[in-house]
Length: 271
Image (cartoon, rainbow, N blue to C red; front, top):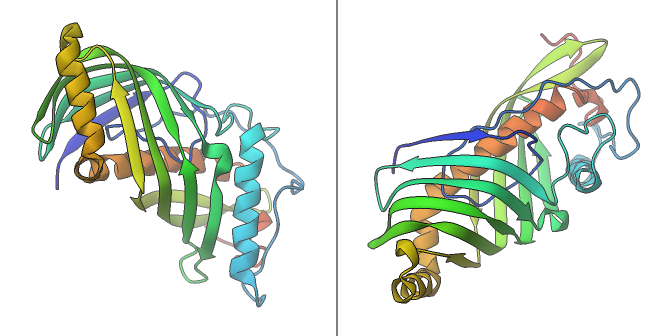
């Protein structure tokens, strides 16, 4: 639908499963390595050959999310999912109903502590997985600088902003390869694909149009009154944002946590 280019620079990136931002981004995570010679207690190990594998796998992934709320010992550089802090996001979007040149800085995302893993299905053929996630409410706050338009509305300003989607249902499809290291099988997460729906969206951007209060108030009111077409216009870039954040996070985590801690009967001798 549209082409975009996004860059994310984050000095101390933190796990999200999901930030709502107007853009495509790629995350940069430090390469600090942790050693997990024994399986952590928060991981439930499952097997393809067990009757309730999907339920077991869902519970295992929920345990990982729950632990990321407080942080995982040995993965301190990943941080926690609530709050999630991102230092700066650069936004360039030139086609379709969204055309903006913008940046977000000092971004804080909250709400992911309430993440519910509804279903997690792992393929016994290609070992990728499909995860259904429900997020009741999420809030993003930060500083913005923007020139451009959303739908027919011109936007020009800089200041404080917040976005608050609610009732978010996310389907994440993850592609992986397997490799072996130190006697364990690991996931090499190569790609993510995200689709989602929301039941509501509220937002506010302060100091639009260089402080012309009447235009600022009317524009924010219009965007909130018309949140459905606004969210649909932004959906491709929001989905790509989530994909890139999750890809960077999962690559970081699963290069350090063995895959066979989650699924015991993954094939050995993977390369």
